[in-house]
Image (cartoon, rainbow, N blue to C red; front, top):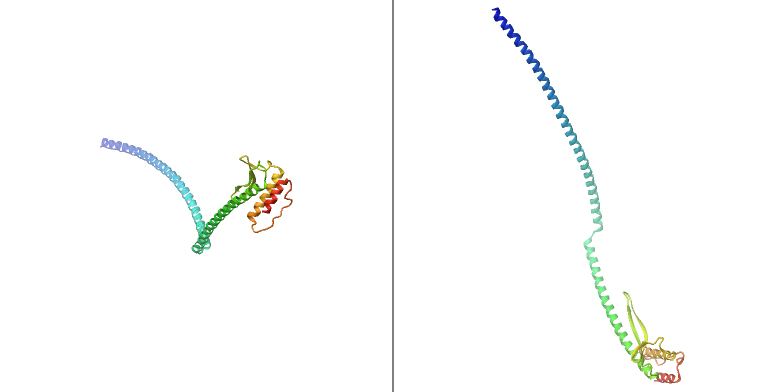
Length: 241
């Protein structure tokens, strides 16, 4: 019995030692587990806090943008409403006003077209009249020169006209030319004082006859200045006729 009790006691002691050892080991494992759990929890909390902070920043940013956009939209609404009211005032009865202005515009265009047509007709009439009168005047100058001038160096004289046109005006330049040896030359600077005086008197007489028909009197101031006797007699005979 004693041997058996001894063995049992040894077994109990051994089991007690093993129990204590295992208890210590379990305690260590529990402590390690606790530490690991705490570490994991700490790591997870930090990551969560960082993510939460990031999301909160994004939320704040988007909220700020939304507020700004909302404010701008309100301002735009106010501006749009103001413009609508302004347009209603400006374009009140716009259809009737448009029709009125359309009628005025087209009426003005038709009037301008008609005026342009009349101006063109008047210009053409004046040009035709000018051409016809120049032909008539030169024919009379030719006739008077042939009767009054007894020289053979100048065959005839006439008035030449040259037209100058600008955008808003039309004018004519006139010059006296002579036909000499079959060539047409300007009389200015190429004739004597007597020839120049005779040409001046003849041109005046031609103009008077073409534009002053019905007048029986023609007055010349010292018409015979610089004329020789033959030309004076010929001129007098022309005036008498």
